[in-house]
Length: 238
Length: 178
Image 1 (spheres, rainbow over the protein chains, first blue to last red):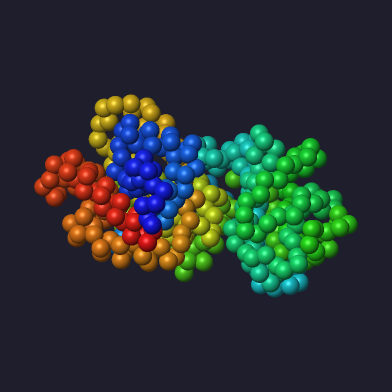
Image 2: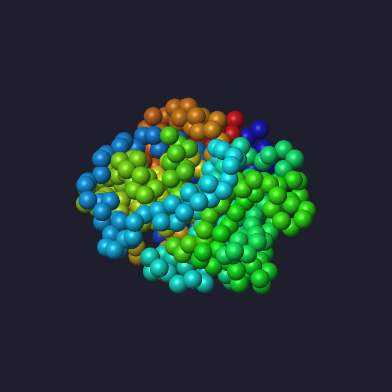
């Protein structure tokens, strides 16, 4: 059965991809396959499979205590000498925790905005904003959302959590003292691209709050959040 | 332990520096083990470790829980970086520009998905290979050995080594799909 439907070419491809995953291909051969993987979903899928299979060998890497001083050098590079105290925005979540009565879930939302200037690391994908969200509701949910200024879309990725029967999660942005504005219902087990209208684009900036509430199926019918806040965070430049 | 590491990675995506420090404390021995085993030089491994954690900080938002196990994602970042360092060590004669452009063109390891039953099966499938063939697969994955190095270590011509290993990978694939 394992050979059914496999032409020699397909088999060759799978072995090539395995060699690539192992790091055995070099030079032009490696480059050529990288290009094919980028354009051929079947090969990309093969690569994912091989990488996940091979990852089971990770346990064979023995732990070796890293030399002291490495962490300090990394932090120096990433955050500079005048790194502000960690957790400024994170602490502000306490405010939001106070707002939500229910207990127990953790949710995280990050939002990246490409138009912002780099603040921390000029080399990196530094042109981003993030918002952290930690909140309370029965099931743990985490999201990361990235805002692509070029496409005008927020890509929201579910990191963790399960759907609640007969309910939907709804994403909102809150600018200053203004009422929350819905960005739509979001799934908990997949990525979703949310196109933003001009108003949303203008309002999502550092300081804007993103919140996720648990609403009835299809989202709040009134345009006003009705369910409990399960996740909330402030948009922050990276 | 894993859920917590996943949380720490998620917090790194949110630029939580305390979480980054915790993540380093929890995982640096493992990742130093990776860079040291592949690079086999303490100072190079230490330098690589720095680069690896810089990448982790910068790419934490690309980790999607439920796909790769968090520690496997971290190991993949460390392993791939170490292999890049290895490749950079030797002079590349042909189309070096292409290599530099496309080395990272493939899908990222963090997109990989893991089937837990598969993960337990690979060891059994490796056991089905002749031991020297399984050693080659392990040597490539764990030590970053190239075909040249594997051929030298096993005292066979380069082409023979490649034929061996490719056959072994086919067998491995068939065993994993069985």
